[in-house]
Image (cartoon, rainbow, N blue to C red; front, side, top):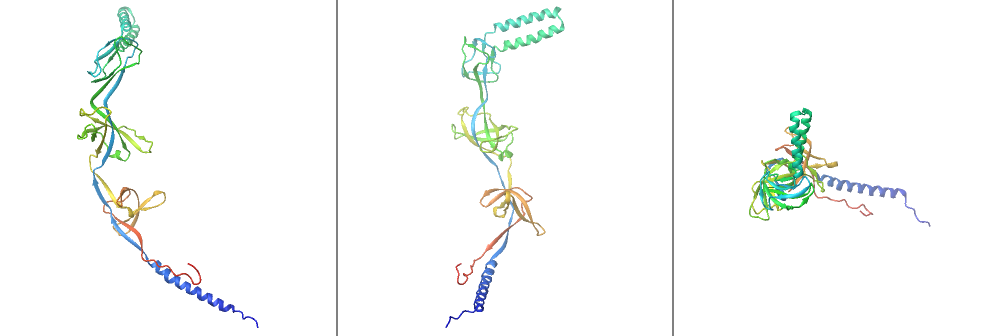
Length: 338
C-alpha cells in the first residue's frame, strides 16, 4: 500500500490563510504606528535685546614718537651737546661734525653770485642760486637737531669720533604721550570709531584704570595666519601715569558709543538646507505662512541672532515638528524570525 500524497489545494489554502493573517496584523499595528506620528505646529515671537557692545583688547604701549637720528655727511665729530636722558625741544642742536669743506664751498658760490649780479646773465645767476641752495643743505647735513620735543633715549657718539654719512648716533623719543596698536576683528570693527574711549589696565599699576582713545583707524585691514580679518587700530594715552613705560603690556576694553539692538529667534525655528542655507516660517497677518531666507548666528541657550532676512520684531514664527507617541511593533510572522 503506497503513501498518500497531500493535495496541492490544501497547501495553497494554508498559504493564503497565513498571508491574510499577516496582512491583517500589519494593517492593524502599522496603521496605529502611523497614527501615533502627529504633525505639530508651535509658535514663537521674534524679540529684540538691547545691549552695549564691549570689545576686549590687549597689547603694549610705545612712545608717541621715536626717531633714530644720523649724520647725513661724513667727517669727524666736532661737538656733542646733550647727554642721555636730557630733555630737548624741536630744532635744538644735538651734535655736529666738521663743516670746514661745506662752509668753504658755500662761500665760494656766494662770491660767484656777487660777480654774476654785476656782469653775469640771468641764466648764470639762476644756476648759481641753485648751487647755493645745494651748498646750504650740505652745510645743514653736518648738524643733528631734535626733530620734536622729547628726551634723548640713547647716545652713541663722542667728540672726535669719525662717522660715515648714514650712521645712526642718537635716538630721541616723546614719552609725554603713549600709543598702542590693538587688533580688532572684522566683526567688531562696525562698533569702532575715531575718538572712541578705551579703558586699560597695566600690571605695573593694577589698581588704576588708564583712559585712552582711538586716534587712528587705517583704511586697510589685514588677514591673519588664523584666517581672521583684522584692523590695526591705534590708541593714544594723553597723560600716562609715571608707572607706565614704553614696552609695558595691558588688557582692556572698548565699548560702543551707543547701545546695540539684536533680533532673537529660537534656534529650533530655523530650518537648515544644503549649502548652509537657513529659512524660517513666518505667519503673516492674513494667516498665511511664508518661507523666508535668513542668516543667523548662534548665541547659546537655544537662541540665535538674526543677521539678515525679512523678519522683524514681533513677527510670529511657526515651528514645525513631529511629536511621536508610543510606538508598537507588529509581532513576527508565523514560522519566521522578525
